[in-house]
Image 1: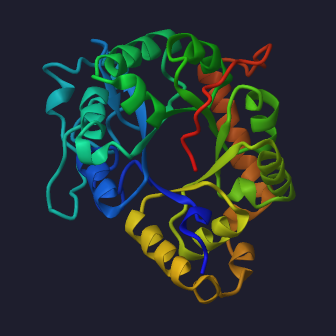
Image 2 (image 1 turned 90 degrees about the horizontal axis):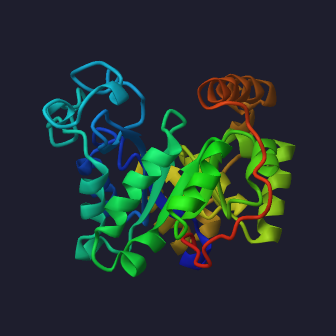
Length: 316
């Protein structure tokens, strides 16, 4: 029997987003109710300086309206927007603010839940982190009951210095699709790395996993929704699995805890059955994404010097 502490934590990717509209309080609450140890969500800032939980820079893909978030006010406009998708309860959902999400996490029964904030490159770092700081520090006992549970996920190195300036008590992670980029631009500044599942399959991914283990750095992997991928991530020894299907991973984790050998049995041939897993496909996806990140956020540059990181670790 495998010790529960040896298995990856469950973090709801945009909440329990397979069952409820992504990045909504209903989705976050469902993931927590399922038993997830953490939730992951994305942030953008409205024209009137409200931080909202939303993945895209525009509203059209998932809601009943259109337009760029940065060009719209929250009050009188986006506060009335609803998702087009309905949850398993048959209801659409409003867009939550960062304030409302923090309030959810500060409920007494939720104070164990970690909060992975995905910082989208379209944000202006000083503005975003100032607004986030004001929300966090407005909570009672925020230093001990909230800040230690938050981890900022950064795609672009331009956010590193502002994050340490405005949110020095928050841990940093890098989110990406390339172990090489993680090593070159984020290694000294981050103590955790959230990388796509296919990017960790290659020889370079295997080497990076070994380096992280040797250095005591944590690895989260996204977005892992298939049983065989979950088992593979367990074999890698990652610290957290980000998934849309929180119930599925938690049920599988229980099976692994009861009988690891039986639950993890099966062929690994699936690793050769999907084009997404092949290096050339992954390289093309990374190159396209990297080009877009630099187009929006500017050229990647190394942060000079080692930044002091918080001493506590969010991920077991």
